[in-house]
Image (cartoon, rainbow, N blue to C red):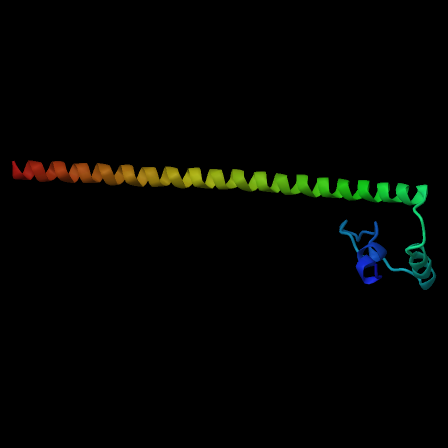
Length: 116
């Protein structure tokens, strides 16, 4: 496995900007070399590695859950807005059709009275 395939792992972190958006972290040369050495294939996983992995997965899952909930709320609000807009449009359309029907009926009654 090359360094390129691990670039997301190497340079991603729990670093966030002022708006709470994740941003890439920077590494000193020493930290980079130490990280590369820990990624060697001859290393075995330690309890600390598994604990770190568990922590990373938990943080990632919480972020995904929060994003899903946020998206779900936005979608719900958008659906409600569309429903109310459609309902209002349906009421206007119904009122237009009713007015047209009434005008047609009055016109037909006027034609019958003139013919009679």
